[in-house]
Amino acid sequence: MTALLARVFSDRYANQAAIGPNLLLMMMYRFAYPFSVALSAARVSPNQITTLSVLFAAVAALALAFDDRWWLFCVFWWLALLMDFCDGTVARMTDTVRNTAFRYDHTSDLFKVFLVVLAVGIRYDTTPAWVVSFSASFFFMFYMVVNHDLVSARKRVRDASPLAGAEANTSPAGPDRGGPGAFRKALYAAVFTINGHTLLVFFVLSLGEDVALLGLTYFLVLSALRAAICINAMVRLPK
Image (cartoon, rainbow, N blue to C red; front, side, top):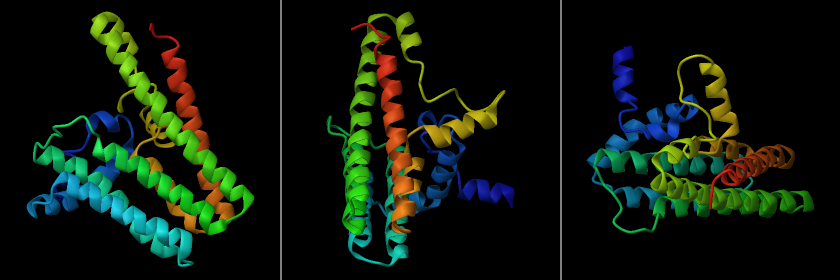
C-alpha cells in the first residue's frame, strides 16, 4: 500500500532545488503529481495549465470580492494552486523549456497574488483592510524585485570568481533537508520562506475580516522579512 501511494503521489518531477528542507512544499508537489500525469496525458501544455491557474485565481478573486459564500473562494483558489504546481511538473515531465526570456509562470504568480489581495480590500472595504491589502501587495512585489536583484548579483559574482560565487550562492532560505535539526529546518522553511506553500494562508481570507487581516499581516511581514534578508545579502556582495 505504501509503495502504491508513493507511486501515485510521487516527487519524481518535483522542483527539488526549490523544495530544499520544505516538507510542506514537498507534500504539495506530491499531491499535484497524479493531476500532472493526467494533464500531460491529455496533452495540455505547461503554458495552458498556467493560463488555467490564472483563470481560476481570477474567479477566486471575484468570489472573494463579491460573493458571501466563503467556500466558493476556497474551491477556486485550491484549483488555482493545484494548477500552479502542475505546470512546472508537466514541463519537467515533457522536457518543455521556454524559448523566450519572458517568464509567463512567474509573471502570472504576481498577477494572481495581486488580484486576491486586492479582493480582500474590496470584500471588507474598511480602512484597516485597504491599508493591510495595499501594504501586503507592496512588500510582496518589493520582495520579488530585490530577490531577483540578489539572484542576478550572485550570478555576476559566480561568473567573475567561482570561489567567491560559491560563497555568494549560500541561500538565505536555509540548509537542505535531512541530517541534524531536520525538524527545525523543515519548520523554518514552511513558516519563514516564500514559495507556493505560502499561498495556503490565503484560504483564510474569506473567513471574516479579523481572520483575513491576520493572515494577510503574516504574508506582509514575511514578505518584508524576506526582502530585508535579500538586501542584507546584497550589501555583502561586490558591485
